[in-house]
Image 1 (cartoon, rainbow, N blue to C red):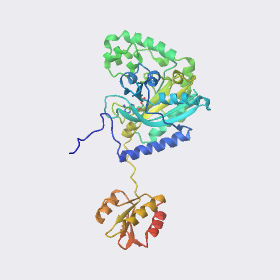
Image 2 (image 1 turned 90 degrees about the horizontal axis):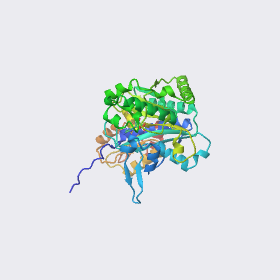
Image 3 (image 1 turned 180 degrees about the vertical axis):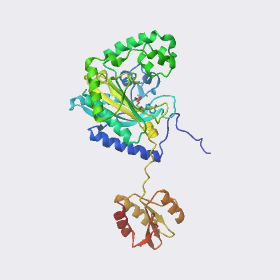
Image 4 (image 1 turned 30 degrees about the horizontal axis):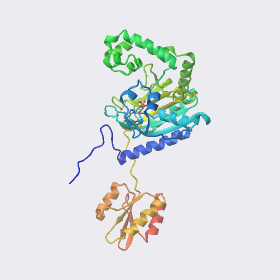
Length: 415
Ligand code: AMP
């Protein structure tokens, strides 16, 4: 009896080879661009103690309150699938005593993240993020360097319609004082606010800036601005980041309403958006989190970083996938030795030439058609008593003495 067909869970997706090649290309360019700037690849677990995210990301955030996949393990401990990467990287920094290394410590990661969100184009329950973090220094050149690296990566990936928004959230005290004033301002306009914003006024009034609700937007128009009341040292830090971006020729919009959905940010915050995307416009963003490592039990340690969504980068770039790449296809005519074919592809691959052979019992005509589909540049046709190489571009065919000769010729021409 045939089994019932199953589907991937709602909000998740399968990656098939065409997209797989685009992803792999992105991963390779990330390793190259980040490696050049001294960032080392790290990987942390897909699930962590729930407490890490409650403390790190913040109890009052939507991510922790509504979007985490939390479960009890068989030992009764509360675990959560990671909704973001910075908390785990900071936990690892503390756990492995990386504060004793020469600072800053520069790290990057790539992996799956999980948020229970309403699925739509560009928003999934399991998605892939590429992220980078620089820990142990509050030098503004790190903020600028990270923003420029993310820009280079996104441009290199072919993301269209990129825009950069930049702001500063100051230090926690300034932010707290500001949150009180903003709350008071919004209370005075309470009737105009959306239910959602009103319900969160006590805990997190800054989230009002994320609302599209017309009444809320109107109430925010003459609201006080955090950026106008930064401490002099925080204003200076922002000015230095801006000067470096200006010098590098990267345009940005200073957006005092930029708040990000995580509690740990201090000072610099930024986000890249793409006009190519619909409602889910953010391709990548981040900022400084000078209190996070300490919050997680480490020594006072400044940090700055970003995360970018791989699925959104691919959606916004619409690049062709690179060809699967078989330079040589080995076809089998009637009576040919499949052992010879097997030896031929192995010898070619060992010498760095991409090669495939017939493995599905097609007719010779079918095999040539298949070689065409694979965009093979040569087909080696093995017969009962001989061997020929066909150039797929010119259609020219020449006889070759034996397998060894074919390998020698093909390697010479194709590698
Ligand atoms: P965040 O940690 O929320 O700042 O997210 C960083 C980046 O991850 C965003 O700019 C998106 O590109 C991507 N991202 C966040 N949430 C999702 C999601 N649910 N589905 C797909 N991509 C996401």
